[in-house]
Length: 435
Image (tube, rainbow, N blue to C red):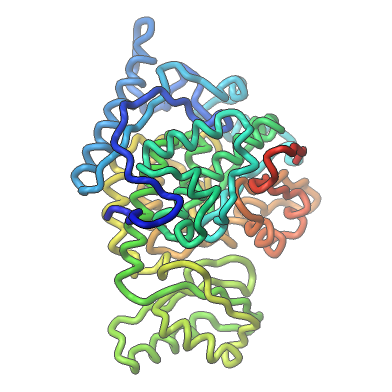
């Protein structure tokens, strides 16, 4: 599906594919030191062969991704690749063995470590990214995004309109790029935070940004996967009236029973195979429920029966993270198969089960599964921050628009939240401040 841009202020005509230009990864993103390949790489011998082989694999991947895009009928812009031997932040990782990240992390005291959290859809707001433009490489990120997406994402992010930015097809790429731009700011102001990062996690689409930061994907590859995901989810959302309902409950709230009765209500109203289920686990007694609008309206009307303290419809277009998103599964799966996914250089936790990714194939599988599975964010927070009593907590940075993940962390683990800082993306262009 192609995004519809005609008549929307702030969006120019669809850009024609351009000739690929060399583009380095975001300077704050982790990259593999030159000559240090994953264990699965074939043995190389002779001067320069390792760098040339890596460049050939990246180029071949670009061709495969572009071919898959044209086969889907959506076209593909250029996929700029870093020149062989580009190391970027490799200087920061010189003493860290790429194949043994746990050993490197173990040498640091817990209080010296850092964790990066990447927000998801719903955090977007017109003007986001404005305060990031003066930091190195941010404009390059948005220029590369324009080549991949075919429209001016920076213009849309800065000037809107909000209605256009809120479209799933647009806001997911916008949050993805703004989050990595925030990493640029963090790297500029506090490079040690990047050096000492031991874990990352992203909420829904934010998981793609976390993986790009961790070196599991190149920026352009990750953005193109987000583009396909967002457009496919937008199309799936338009197939049936559906949405998402944020619910703040009580210890006695029975979310599963409430969803069951909502589905029974829908069946009585003539809706076949109704959907109503928990889509996001945020923190204790707080859930987001996705499903048909009829089911969500039923829950709102009967909130007292189920001991719900507060309910609120979210400004999204569909029932994300449920089987209503199944039409988006295959397009995303095809793109991810064409991407050269690597093992992350720091621990990245999956939304599907809260566990750390252990193998690149797990990343490809679970990113697809995530589209139709609940986001287990509460479980992820426990996995990252559980520790013995008296042990210091790492510094946590929310990189991207908004502070929603900080609020959730406060409700999941108050002690961990005390070491939390947001990386502001909305500050005025003529100001500078430490985090």
